[in-house]
Picture (tube, rainbow, N blue to C red):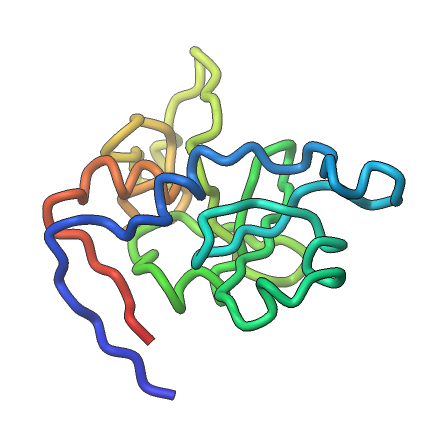
Length: 157
């Protein structure tokens, strides 16, 4: 399946919803069920919901969805899932359960945290947080969006 990279003057409509969504709260529609945390985002509807919402409804079955995961109390998405819809190049990746993932939003930084000289001292262009791997320029998708809003790359599949 081939994808084309297109230059757009504006970011995808669903992206702000993804970045501002509060994940891992209980789903009100399935409060009586176990594992009802909202950890799925529907790109086509701009909504977050739980896995039971996906199973119990045919509304989202053909929609583009992202599963959100937690890594050290912060929301991440698997790189292989998000890169089908969004250019995540130059965003720091992390290995989580054997798969690469990227943070949705920047993690808080300790006031005394300084980049290691042995690692090149790279910092995020948006929030100035330490970045582990050069040539990455951003610690999260939100930071890339903040800096890249003029020439945002969006993958259309």
